[in-house]
Every structure is written in C-alpha cells, then in structure tokens.
Image (cartoon, rainbow, N blue to C red):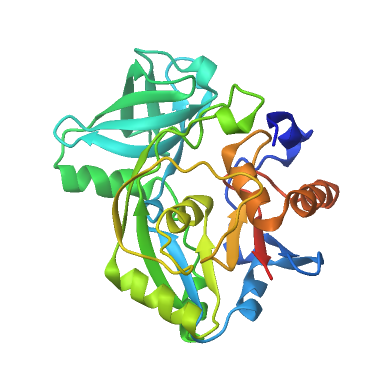
Length: 313
C-alpha cells in the first residue's frame, strides 16, 4: 500500500488534550470485522464483549503513566512529554517524545506538577520529536520514580477489575517502545519503510494462557498496537504463540494475516501513523477508514487521550 492512502483530514479540535475524568464515560466505537457493523457505545460497555476464559494481553511497559504535561521555562508554553525509556538511573536520563517539538530545544527547562516541583532539562535531540531529558531531582531513585509517575495517569482503566470478576484473564508481554513507532514515514511505497528494532519478551506463562484460550475457542484481545505487534512477532507454526526474547522490527500494514489476536482495543490514531496502518491491517483498510470518518462525524476524540475503538469479529 501507499503512504498517501493513510491521509485523512483531522480537525484539530478533535485531538484530545486531556484524559477524561472517568475512563468508563469515554466513547467506545465497536467495529465488527465480519459484518462491517459499527456500534457507538460507552467504554464501560466493553464488558459485554468478553466472557470467562477470554484473555486480554497488555504491554507491561505501558502500565506506568507514560504521558506528562508541563510548562516550558520563561514562556510558560504548555508541553507534552511521552516517556519512552529510562537511560540512566544515576543521572535520571530519559528518552522521550515532546509536543510541540519545534519549541523544545537543548538547554530548555521543563516544569511539571501543580507546584512545578519536578524539573527536567533538555540535553539532546534524538529525532524530530525525540529528546533526552535529565530530571533534576535530589532524592533517591525510588522516590524520584514514585513522584514522576504520580504526574501521569495509568492507561489501564479501573473497568479491568470488572472484567477480571467476569473471569477474563489478563496477560502481559513486554515491548520496549522506542522512537520507531512514532517516526515519520518518508517513503510513499510502504514496502520500503524500515521500522526501528524494539526489544521485547514473551514469557512461557503468557504463551500457555494465550494458547489455551485459542484451543478453547476464546477471545485473545490485544490492548494497544504495541501489544498487537508484540504478539504478531511471537507466532509459531499453526497460529499459536511461542516464547521470545529479543528484538522486533516488524512493520505491519495491510494486508496482514493475524493468526493469534482475535480482538484489538486501541485509540484513534493520527494520519500517516504506523499505528493507523496496523489498525487498518487488523480491521480491514476500507472498514477502518470508514469508521474513522464516522468517528469524526460523531465527535470522537483522537490521540493518546482520546476515545477508544474495539475491533472484534
């Protein structure tokens, strides 16, 4: 497929700037792959689509609060920081993505929290949106991480507790998301794009859980595109999962045959993004692009703090 096929005009006002106060109150679009039906529900309604023995798989690197909002020194400009990975515990160095990137330069100080007690200095540019931050914090590493994570909100909604009560199992793999998933694609022919490699691991416990669910005809739902990519990178012969520790540079775009995951929970992604391409590969290009158009017409919120989509048979 071509890069230009993933262009759509997204009104700026539909990009969510903050998380909803109650995740269960956010919108949920349900896209049925086989029938092409599109439903408009609340996120709490996701409960009706999963039953005992189904498995929801998460990327455990996403369990900590990855997104922070702060202000730039002097100008007070509002900035968004997405924590990718910790580079050095002693010096509190982190690889991050920043928005708006054009305003964040080496030497800038960024302030976080209502009292602006968490301060970081930009010490390097890694990509057009990537930066290396050094957090200026005098306490212990444990105290620093605790205070840092308090500034964000975890992606796992409390509604997962209710799914657990229904008997829906929760499994975790690890994909250390780097800049690759966010890097701009600069080729029209997608077969010529090369993803950056990302470190990942899949445990025997998860493999056993997922393969048992598949053998019993149960749902295997990937929560997030990084999870979907991780599962697809650890497929064995016969459409089951296998343990894996290593790296993946798998770039998924239509058409693609997913043999393990039967459902996907994700957000509404920006034009040209690798995440949008992966969602189109899972749900079908025509159906997902139709769903995105309908989402804009219905006022769904896009981006990291936006509404959710469930793709299921």
